[in-house]
Image (tube, rainbow, N blue to C red; front, side):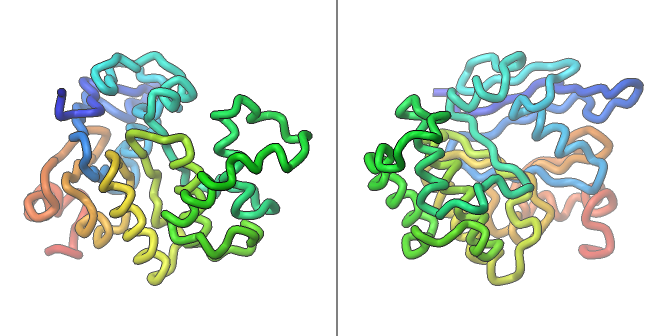
Length: 250
């Protein structure tokens, strides 16, 4: 089996006359937690959106599990097991925690748009929904309204709804954005646990989190890959210090 679950070669994205990403080669090893970092404007968010097919590349190729997904749409790659989260909260705020996950699980029943049906029709999903919520530390919040959760618990709920799709690979877009210190610790541990059973690629600004969680780090600058490797190695790279870490590691 190919040790790399996701591979990009020569990835490029042009916006009019501006080249946001140029010649990016990226390989994510199966079963690892891989972080994509870089200063503002480095092209990491564009690269992330290309990999998850929310943007179509201007050039290059992307393969997942050995299959060319370069021209597939986001829903198609999600069905293959490549699923992403978003920076902006994606939960239904006025529904209960349990109902949020049950709605996500409806895909398997083929009733994802049958919101008008009797709520009891979703009871068959309760066991799996409760199992997912327990796995992210929300087992005691089943009846809580999502809007009443702390920001960290909302992140956990988002991860639970994402896991309901049974992803083989999970892509996290700045999972620590907006979190306080305590919530960062909780969500970090959750990502560590999730990463024991699947591959994770995350864009993240918090270097302490990146250092603690990541097996491999790819650093981008000016739309290109600047360095790649373990944090201990990458953090010593003079070009990385100059472009990204700056005075914090001088």
